[in-house]
Image 1 (cartoon, rainbow, N blue to C red):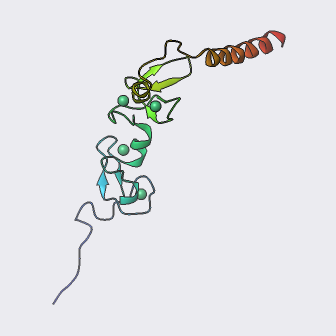
Image 2 (cartoon, helix red, strand yellow):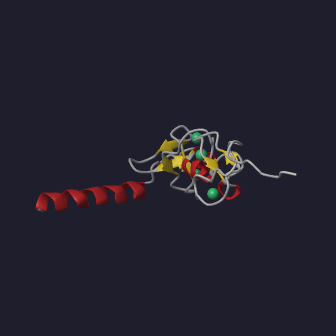
Image 3 (spheres, helix red, strand yellow):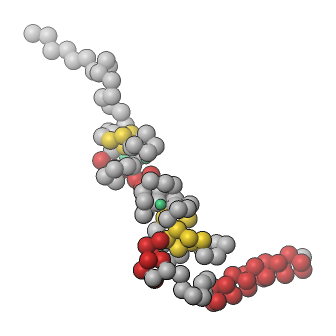
Length: 125
Ligand SMILES: [Zn+2]
Ligand SMILES: [Zn+2]
Ligand SMILES: [Zn+2]
Ligand SMILES: [Zn+2]
């Protein structure tokens, strides 16, 4: 009886995870196309895509993180409240929409102070 095994022609055998490079790949990410192992699989996408995609819609790439809850959010699921701060629509809903005074004066003042500090240091030197 000959029991010689041929593995070379059977395609995907031995493909390694493209994230960790150590474990055998078990899933293909539908977003980036990476082949990843079980540990780097987040259920419907790879962990890399999970970290870089919007935590609300899950479909688009996150552009910032919510200033309140800190989750990554995309452009459409968040509102720009200051030049540097974004708030996700879930936090907005929880707040009942934007407060009448938004952005809060304290936030604006802190922002202005930082900007003017930068400016004056530029002017001085
Ligand atoms: Zn892996
Ligand atoms: Zn991916
Ligand atoms: Zn989104
Ligand atoms: Zn939020």
